[in-house]
Every structure is written in structure tokens, then in C-alpha cells.
Amino acid sequence: MALRVLVVDDASFVRDTIKRTLRQFITNLELHEATDGRRALAILKNNEMDLVLSDWEMPEMSGEELLRWVRTEARNPSMPFVMISSRGDRDHVVQAIQSGVSDYLGKPFTAEELRRKVGKQLKKIGYKDEGRPRQETSAFGSLDVLTGGNAQAKTVAPEDVAAANPLFAKPAKAVVAKQKKSGQFEGKAQLRFPNTACQVMVRELSLQAMSGFMVRPEVLPTLFDQAVVDLENKDGKALARLNAYVHSLQAVENHPNTNKLKIVVRFVDNDPEKFEVISKAIAGA
Image (cartoon, rainbow, N blue to C red; front, side, top):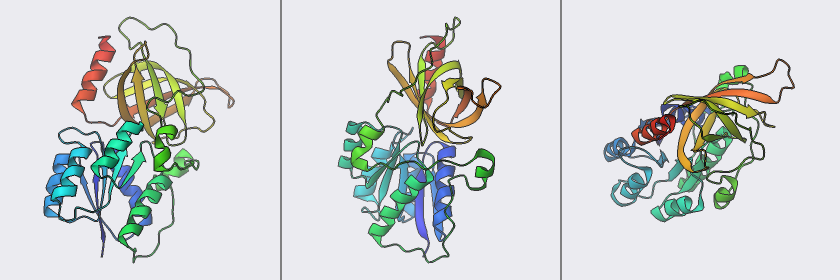
């Protein structure tokens, strides 16, 4: 019997990453997807699922609201429900556990982290894939030929998530920002990737993307890597947390030992509230 999995996220890029990774280690798979909790609820009312992988912060209906419905109204109220979130603060995780979540996966995540979390839940329900085993690769498969693949990241236990992925973790190195032109975003941004985190001097900010300069980290992000952008104003106050991916990465200097990089990330969220925050930040409000 095929494993029936529902993937819920308002960002198509994240959904595609999850689906691509699942297909690489589960052969007998029936995938369903939804852009928010309300659409996911409609799917669950008409289909019995074996596993739900859901974002937590979504427009229309949140992952927490969906989970509460699953635990009280679904055909299979005990089905594994894995929360996927860019938030890692302890209160947020505790709230999810109290709501009945089966496990937690922090954004951005590696293919190995997703495989491990899903494998743990499949073991609990006794599922065995009867198809031929697939060769385990990264979440982007053949794109590794172009991007260089991802370095192996250390996995973090759920109980250590607050320490491993703090809400606005400060990286060791920072880029000193130059004077901004009038009307430009004057705050700061921190980028979190599956294997590293960096502070960025923002050059341009729009509703679709952000470009800026950063100090070269020990582990380089690659094209199409997931990223989480934590935006702060010039006083260090948190403004918004945005899901994104690496669109381009360029050396600032013309030699291989350059320590300065220009990066462009494109946002993948589809949340009107986040768009409003970015618009105000750009306007200097």
C-alpha cells in the first residue's frame, strides 16, 4: 500500500523541496499538498492520510489550528503530524507539543534531517516501503552537479532546538553597514541556512527579494538552498521572519580567497501580513 502524505505550506518552493526529498527515499508514495490549513482540512475530510508535514505559520488557517482539528475530528486522529517552522524559541515548541504535535523540524532543514524525522514517524506506525530502495541524495538531486551539493549538517534533537536554533541567533561575524541612502531600508538582516548563519548588510529590499553583502562563512550556502531571513530595524527590534531561497551568490573581489560575498535571496512566503511589514520597512515607517 502506498504511503499517503499531506504536505502543507504556503510556499511552493518549500513544498517542492519536501516532496522531492520524500520521493528519494520512499518509493511507494501518494503525495497530497495544500497551501494553507483550510485547504489541508478539506483534503483530510475526504482522504485518510498516514502522515502530515505542515508549516506552522500560514494565512487563512495556521498549522496549530489544523493540528487541533486533526486530533479531535479527523478519521485518523492519532496520525503523525510533524510541525515545520522557522521559529525555534522554546515557548513556540512547547506550545506545539501541548497541541499534540508528533515532532518538530526547523527551517531551513537538510534532506537528511527531513529523512530522519519522517523515518522516525514511519517506524512508529509500522510502515515498511515495499518498493525498491532509492539511492539517498540531497534534496536537490541532480542539481548538485551545478550547485556543488550540501555539506553534512549536525542534527539536533527536539529538546535542544531552542539552543540550536535561537529565535534571532547572533552569528560570530558581522558586516559593518555603510551609510544608507534616504528612503532605503536601514535595518539589519540575518540569514539562516541549513548549515550556517550569517549577518548581512542589506543593499536592496523589495517584496520579492533581498540583496546584500556578507562575510564568507566557513560553510558556503549553495544555489537554491533554503534560507530564513530575520529582519530587524536599525535599533535591533525584530520586524519579520521570511522564508526564502538562495537565488545568486557572487564573490565581491576577483580572487578565490575573497572574504566578501554578494548574495541575493528571493522570498517564497505568500503571507499578506509579511508583505505589509516589508512595505513599511522599505518606506521607513
